[in-house]
Image 1 (cartoon, helix red, strand yellow):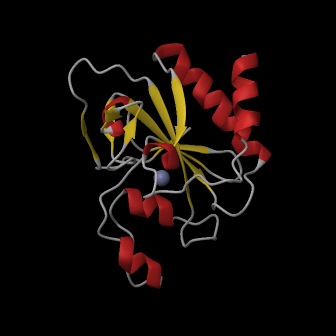
Image 2 (tube, helix red, strand yellow):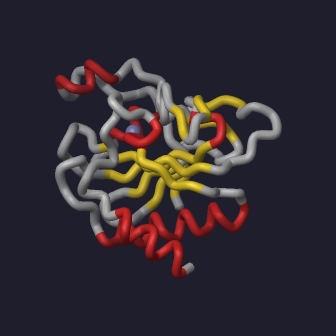
Length: 169
Ligand SMILES: [Zn+2]
């Protein structure tokens, strides 16, 4: 796993159990894969001149703990014990501020296209590793924790595939 340090994190509330994984999708520019733009966004060095869409988002201070690229390679931006800034205004099972108690995983992709088999393999193994050390109870979509505001990772994400693999362990 490659490490790219994002400055966009802070302390979790003391004593917080990390019980949730939030899944996202992202591609930059939208619909394009590969390239450095996601890493640049998460490290606050996205060039606003490089693409019209980058002008809209370059000032955002966002991050996720992990990114799973199309080839299944994983990049870590924030240590799990720190609070990454991925979910925004959010709630899960009546509890708000999901960033406090979740691990954020981005899948490189769009909401309109399927994800790659290599991404499922890496995601499954990553979540298994997280479950070995953290009291993970739920895996939710960003669209589940921020309904009406977010729609990722999108309808093409194969939840049955993920959950069946995790149940089989
Ligand atoms: Zn998201």
